[in-house]
Image (tube, rainbow, N blue to C red; front, side, top):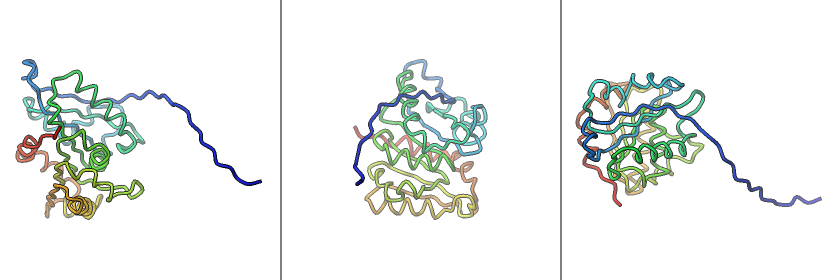
Length: 222
């Protein structure tokens, strides 16, 4: 008997819980609209204790600078998950925070380190219309998802990537390949390679005031 083709269709509803850290600048009380940074942590901070996220990246900067002038949203990825699997949940969380707080919708930025760098490349490429700029730190691409070609979704979004030349965890060639491909697509992408750093290039990156000055210059086109 010959095989016959069929289509299966069913609507599936699911619930999901995601812990996160939120920082709101003091001036928020005056209803001033603030830029927002969505930060995706690395694999070592996964779990159900959001205080773990404070050890690196944007949450650490906020701990050291309580008057940090951005609203910052730092979700925690559950154990045995990756950011690439949570795209829809991240966008729903972002929408919820933007509803509840005075966010400048033209200045929403995405960044992440290591596993979060992969997540920033992926989420930014899939939903570039949501972000004014993307900053992947020691990230890369998953060949199973069709990268680096799919990074062309970011052709109209400024990207500044960072990587350590001595990185043995995520080779700097991954950032180079993505930036090269994005430039081929006509994108606005720059790459900073630290010749003296390994995988931890995020400490220097997020401590650099020039990064935040650059972010504030980027506005999403409506």
